[in-house]
Image 1 (cartoon, rainbow, N blue to C red):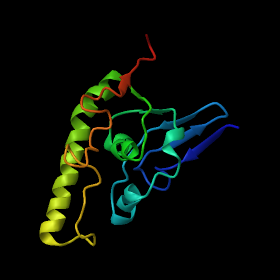
Image 2 (image 1 turned 180 degrees about the horizontal axis):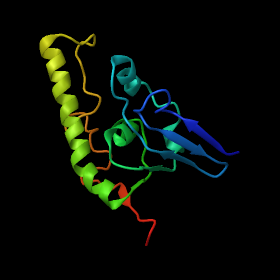
Image 3 (image 1 turned 90 degrees about the vertical axis):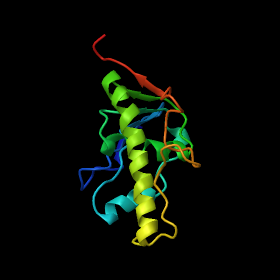
Image 4 (image 1 turned 180 degrees about the vertical axis):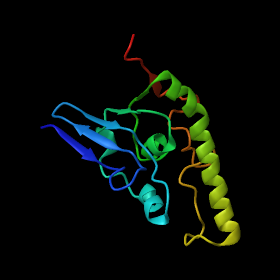
Length: 152
């Protein structure tokens, strides 16, 4: 069996997630956040549609949050296999993912302070390094991120 399943970026340009399955392996290409209106953002809070323990690797095409920003949620749901990316992507994610976590925390704090969220209390999708300890999908120093080059 060989199958390609579009789990995101279908009908929209955000939330890039493509599942490649064969009899031997399952690989997730990109692991992005849905961005935009509330209907799209709500998809980020849904459980991942595949058993994450069956995914043998995540391959990131580049560092944009709509291609990488769901990694902390994937890890929170039990993903523990490698994340492969280019060295420049790895370098950028050391800044982008913590920054995205900080923004999530700030948005939740603002929602709680102003009361605009329907969730009481509003919770960040993932955090920078708070109690949930879900921000860094790579464990402290991004050791799970493994860079590679196709040209070496």
